[in-house]
Image (cartoon, rainbow, N blue to C red):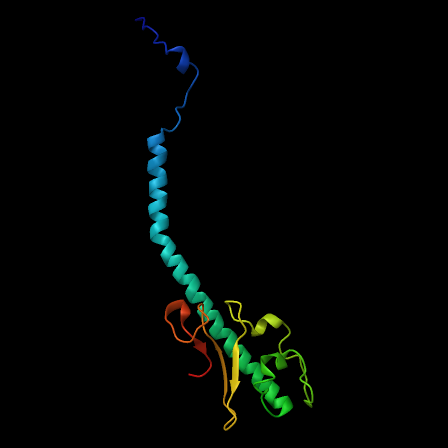
Length: 151
């Protein structure tokens, strides 16, 4: 049997079985994470913007169906002055109102926190419910696109 000399570590390393990460290794990991975020964030934000637009489309469709129920009970759509609030609170001098047709006030608020626009033409009784999108202005593209029941 041959004797092998035992190697001794300096005192500063004695008893340590693991080494820590170096600053360079941490910076590389942070750089990789930053690159992943830079690539993924615009996609996620785009999905979020499109989801609000899709939510507005669905809410407008629900409001239109609710307006039809209101019309069946009352005999006409709410006037422009009465607005969509007539689906929640009975307007003055309206007979056969059997609501509330919407139980939550936020049902007439678009995903960007503004009330839906409601107009009714006096000549043919055509109803339009719309939202001006994220920017709150007519026109626009992307998240600023107007969403309307008038197709």
